[in-house]
Image (cartoon, rainbow, N blue to C red; front, top):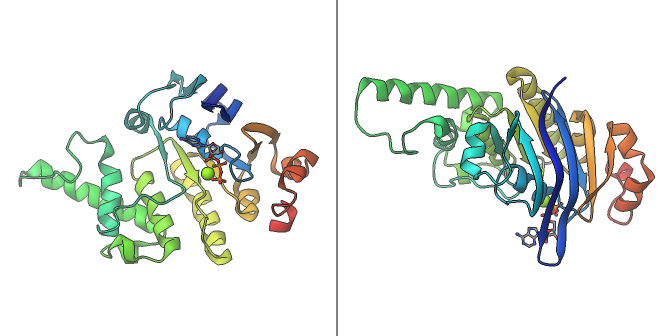
Length: 260
Ligand SMILES: Nc1ncnc2c1ncn2[C@@H]1O[C@H](COP(=O)(O)OP(=O)(O)OP(=O)(O)O)[C@@H](O)[C@H]1O
Ligand SMILES: [Mg+2]
């Protein structure tokens, strides 16, 4: 197994607040890794640094053999790291298919939605993008909504749409920030299977932030648990779940076991 992403001694300090302190992680190619921890632990901040949204105060991020620390988000996305957001960021007035086409166009030089002219290469490319986007909708099980306005979809399907959109950009590493948030147990069980399926089908590597322990335990092969900006435990799912430090961190906020 080889390492796809390595974060070394990452720090993100906001004035006096150490949102992330000395974060170290190695993500194996092809694995599904979990990032868990109580509210405000620093999980989203880690993903913000890995995706270039935040420039770390210090530390280093190596992705696919390249130093990407402080590289702009659009460049990082083109290099192969795409991410979803904890609070959805869809173009709600556009159709479901159009939202995915935007993701699929990421590697094109054309300006998104700026497909003008009627040349044959343009038309061919448009057809390719559409086919690919439809495939992503099928993978996520929401193809029946292709022509619907995104904002009108049930919430769980909007979450799936966000994954379809970032998947269409052909990532090597997919960062998912609470993909099951707001889903009912049946939807999150379904999502668990879909996420495993896309990893297997596209040979992706996935880092997943999630509060739903059933999803985490069902999917992740390795887990990092954070509290107050620091990793307090890491390892195989069972070991992390049973780590007294993890149990203590979750006490009073819904114990890890109670969430099962
Ligand atoms: N841009 C910012 N400026 C200042 N403080 C920030 C910023 N982003 C995050 N923080 C703070 O950093 C800490 C970690 O936040 P973060 O969003 O990473 O937590 P989280 O683990 O994702 O929590 P949750 O489970 O609630 O999503 C919090 O105290 C938060 O208020
Ligand atoms: Mg968060």
